[in-house]
Length: 182
Image (cartoon, rainbow, N blue to C red; front, side):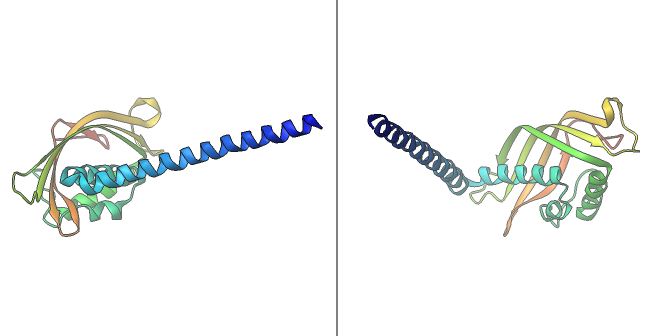
């Protein structure tokens, strides 16, 4: 009989450890999401620009052309002669060329304009990009994988519904779809 009481006590103490573990997980999760929410709200415009860049990375990896086109300002113009429409069309061709895209942003140096309202920003981004070509498309060795570390200069403008891409510049030549750009 004494043995039965002990096992029920052991079960209760085991159950209390599970409750403690569950509460620890819940509290940690709430703290993590609370910290991220506070960082987004109180982090200022630099945090919003960083979030914009990470959103663009995610949309490229997911091949979300509609989401990407929403991120481009109507007044987009770059030194390569692209406007908003040609950039979106070029991005659509780029996404169709590759079956998989992986981007690791290693660094993003963000500079907001000096004005009090900070309506323009520049970000020099260093990213490792790896692409897998589709079958039947010419690609280098390594089973259709292409990849390189590149630097970009992104110019952005703050509009009423958030940050938008105003211009992109390749700071070093980039090999995309078998062609050098930049």
